[in-house]
Every structure is written in structure tokens, then in C-alpha cells.
Amino acid sequence: MAESVESSCYSSKLSAKSIKNDYMKYISFSIAVAISLAGCQTTSSKSEQSLANVPVNSTSETLAQTATPIDISHALSGDTAAPSKVTDDEHQLSDKALTEQDVWHRIRSQFTFHIPENRRLVAQRNWYAKNQRYLDRVANRAQPYMHYIVEQLEAANIPMEIALLPIVESAFDPFAYSHGRASGMWQFVPGTGTRFGMKQNWWYDGRRDIIASTQGAIKYLKYLNKFFDGDWLLALAAYNSGEGRVRRAMRNNARKNIPTDFWSLDLPKETRAYVPKLLALADIVKRPSHFNISLQPIENKSVISAIDIGSQIDLAKAAELADMTLEELQHLNPGFNRWATAPKGPHYLVIPNEKADNFKQKLANLSKQDRLAWQRYRIKQGDSLGTIAQKFNTEIGVIKQANNIRGTQIRAGKHLLIPVAAQSLDSYTLSKAQRLAKKQNYRRGSEKITYTVKSGDNFWDISRKYKVNYRQLAKWNGMSPRDPLKLGQKLVIWRNSKTTKLEQKPVEQAIVRNITYKVRRGDSFARIADKFNVTISDIERWNRLNRKKYLQPGQLLKLSVDVTNAI
Image (tube, rainbow, N blue to C red; front, top):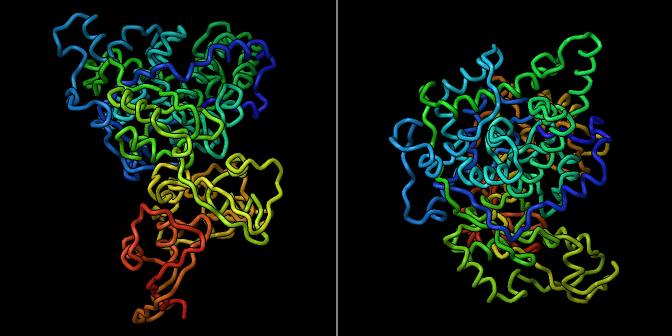
């Protein structure tokens, strides 16, 4: 995990001048991003369970497993069939031809690290060698990103073993979120992410953006390598636990007149396993047939590009222009938290090369006004810009900009133009809110409790009150135990009911009543269905609605609700 500067381990050696120089090298958003892809997949609930035994760092266990796996190969590679599995010696080709054909060959041809046969490394290698299916899943997730990462590492003159680091950090899941507040494929904590160029706000989190996070990881690793005088193993250890901790371990060894190399240091258990995991993976990639492993091939060619879009756009509209599903577009652009790109940037979208020209042409013909959907809203007595922004799932600044408002004063009776999502919020399945809703609704026990955070609450106190594990409580809600709780925040608590048969109430006949429900701000079809224990299809049928239609605050819905337990 990329350790936070908040942990007091950050060195003063990182001067303002060096940071400025690094930022000047930051990638231009108009540069084509070459990533090979035959199929793309995020972690499902099943895969979350199947990965439970993977020897990953405790700080890189994913808390926010997000979307159902999707296959976007048809959107990225046209009619080209995915190549079948091959080992490194199944084709009678020259090394050059192999390198040109498959990214794995390109990677292994540039390995430089010495791989020792010691106990710590062998233990990690044995695990990977026995888990072909895990390596297949990781390779599947790596397909959209690996080619881009390899090219960036080559350009930065970084050892090619670093291309495997996202396997150790996140299993190549850009939505991964750890116990230590680290997020994204490269697992950056907030402070380090900000320092190395990753914006983080309501609309966008650059730690999940493949471009921003990869560039940030390269800059951070180059800094660490320089900090430790060119020793890459020490740099990698510091990437996991912080350069301050590694430096203290080196000083302790120096005082005892013992070696200060990585293998000799007294480091945390997680860090002691971290570097061996990377070296073990490198050894397997270098000689897969020796370990009876076959690597899912990744074609060594450019298939997607980062397209400059100029300004904010609804992701549903962008998907329509690109001839992609909304989920496919969101999967390639995981940095965006909401239904649209961020108003203040970054202003680029990752689009398949085959669709890029058509997308750019359609985008050029789209008026700025049509980039977002708009709603005319009449200001009511007691309204503020803040309450209106919450009601329409947007920001105050966006409303002010759209209506040329300079201050904060608004007048009842006047009208505002509000940018709103073009589709129902449920349709943006990989948005932050929808990923959280899916996380919270995944059944973890027989009883689900919704808890509203009060002043002074923390995970530990809430977990003691309901007799659950505080780490599990945070995980159920897509958070880290270190994340601050907000007043009024809704938490889901799962536990197994201890009611005995003697205490159970007799079975009652269901009593169903028709009610009228007034849609509130933040409501979606999924949240209303969960609240009243009905299905989204029921709501659609009762109200002759389509779930893709945006629900308006104040809208009245007819519901048939089982009120047996409420009487």
C-alpha cells in the first residue's frame, strides 16, 4: 500500500523543487492510452469469498467489492476472438516474435531483479503456483490496464517487475478499498494520493483513475528508489509501510553492526511478506511452464485511448455517443464517483480505439447545453443552495455556475436550472452510491439493521453496542475503521438472530396495504424497494414507470406493502 504522508513517515527530503519537476512530467490527457483487452471483469461477491485465502496484505484486502463481472470485449476488440491460453514454450517462435505477440513475454524479457531461493519467497511462490484459477482471474482484470502500465514503466525506466505490483496491492481491482484507507489499483491513501497528483473530491477520485494512479505510482516509486540510493527492494518495502519505518529499521541494524538490506531488516509481518510476493510472481511469470502454470495472454497492441472531452458530460450521454453500455464506460473510467465527469476535470474519457473517431465526431457535434440533462426548479421558502444541491444529487458550485450566481443568496419564487442525471441513478451501477448500496445489501447475516450515526459515534462503540466486529462493520459499509463517520450517516449492521423457538412469534397472515410514498432526495428505485421489502419490478408495474427514468423529489409512488410486523 502506498503509505500516507499523514503517518508521519514522510521524509522532508521530498523538496518542493522535486515535486514541481515531477508534476511537469505528468501525462497529457490527450495522449492515447494503449491497453490490451479481450475481456474485462470486476470482483463479484463470489470472487470476494474465493479470494479470502489469497496471501495478500492486510492493508490491501478489498472492502468495496463492487460490480457484477461484465464482459466488455465486444466493445473493445470488435469481432476479434480472445486468444487461447498458452505457456511460454508452446509456440515455436523467436523471443522477438513472442514479445510482439503477448505482453507477458514483453514483461519477462525485461526482468532484472535477482530472485533468491529463500523460505519467505518460496512460501509465496508455492501458493501462487497452486492457484491457477486465481492467476486467471487476476489476468482477466489486468487486461484493460497492463499494456498501458508496461509502456509507462518503460518510458520512466522503471524495472518491469513493478508491472506485477498491482497484483500484490489489489489483484488489479480499481475499486479496491483497504482497512488502511487505501484505494484503487495501486492502493494510495488520501494524503499520498494528493501529493502525487491524484485529485479527490465529491465527483472524482484519482486514486481509482488508471492514468492518474499509474503516473502517481511511478513518481512515488522513483522518489523512494532515490531515497534509498537505488535499492529497489527497500523502495518497495517503503511503498508498503512508509520510508520512515524502513529507515528506522535500517538504523537499528546499523547500530548493531548487522546488514541493512531488505532481507535483514526487522519490519512488520505484512511488509516482510510484501516484497517476496512480488518476487514470487516475477519468478512465475518468468518461467510459468516450470511451475505448470499457464498465463492468460494479453495482446500487445493498443486498443483504447484517452479522449479529451473539454468539459463536464453525463456518463450516460457519453456512453451513448461511444456506442457502449453505461456500465462498460464506467468500468473503463472508474475514477468518476457520480453520474457525470467532474466539473473541474479531469476532462478525458477512456474509449475503445475502434469507437474513438466516431465518439469524437459525435461529441464535436453535441452542443455544450446538451452534455447534461436539465431541470427547471422553482425555489421554495426555506430553500438554500445546499439543500437544493442535495435534492438533485449535485454540488452547490455546479448550480451557481449554471445560473450565474455569485454569492449564496437565492429568492423564493425564482427559478433555477439544475443539471441532473440523464437516467435513473440506479442505472449508473458503478457510481459510488450504487456500489455502496450493493455492498450494504449483500446479505451477511439473518438480521439487517440500519443505524443512523449520532454525534460522538465511532465504529468501535457501535460495534460493541450491537456485538459485532468493528472491522466487519466498516467493511459492510464500504469503509475503513479509520474513516470518520458523519452525523446522520446511515450504516448497515448485519448479525445473526439469537431468538429461540420458544421466543418466536406465531406465524401471522400477511396484511398488505396500499400506500402512497413521496420520493425524497437521494431516493432511488433500489433504496425504495429495499425500504419497503418489495422489488423494483413491483414499483415499475404499480406506477407504470421504467427504472431508467429519473425519480423526482416530491414524486408520489403507489406501493403495496406488507404491514404485518408494523401492526
